[in-house]
Image (cartoon, rainbow, N blue to C red):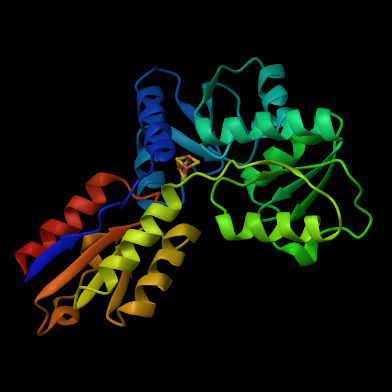
Length: 278
Ligand code: F3S
């Protein structure tokens, strides 16, 4: 059985950087904490806990040690709260997210009204909203044009959650234009998610079966599995190589492998090795 890996698969730049920073922090004596799980990957979170890096609910749960800010970033208030506790901060905010936060604040100062295209309640979106509000802006979070508030007047700035699609941004921009508002758009979309989705879809059309690796609680991995299943019904979502059942691959000549943006390289390598051994 031939094992083919998707061109883009696994940990994106921001997640890998956060993981490397957390492992480095674990080597420093006092232990470290992450504000929420570092990534949506139970194996990685358990491994970090063994190394002394624990996920906590908020700054108030930390007595000592370094506080690691996740790749999604945090609100300015959370950052201040860590500082007030006198705890050292290791900022693993993805540089793309940090750029979106700066864009949100900048738009708030210049336009006064900011539309955040994204998923309400997501930690990254909460950070963007807070940055815009602290800079004096009125903020609306919209996933689609129907979410736009009725009473919106120019000038309006738009900033985007990094994992959103270009289509979602364009739809919201077009809806504002149709109301006679030409928004100032800061396109802060990161292409890591799109690259993984497009290369998984291409692979799904070429193989007999497909394995998608990543946390079941990872929305980007679940989305990847849905995309693959649409083109390749023999798609299996696993969290680790141990879950692989040889019966899934009866009569298969080629099997594809892909992984979400929160899946580290060693988990992918273990799955590829197991498949090659079948
Ligand atoms: Fe950063 Fe893009 Fe990953 S924003 S955390 S590189 S999906």
